Amino acid sequence: MRVFITGATGDLGRALGAALVARGHAVRGLGRPDRMAPTM
Image 1 (cartoon, rainbow, N blue to C red):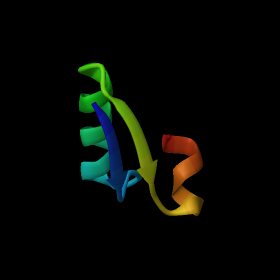
Image 2: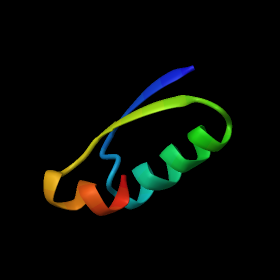
Image 3: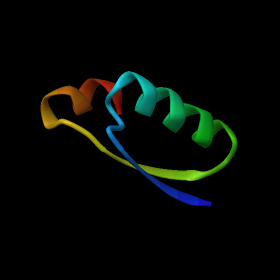
Image 4: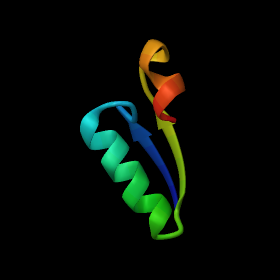
């Protein structure tokens, strides 16, 4: 499944993205630019 996550750099968004990727989903995320680089 293809999934888009808003708030992907937050605590919940990071955990959700990691869980979805681990299950084989294609994940795209939107987050704050200043926080995104080290976490995505």
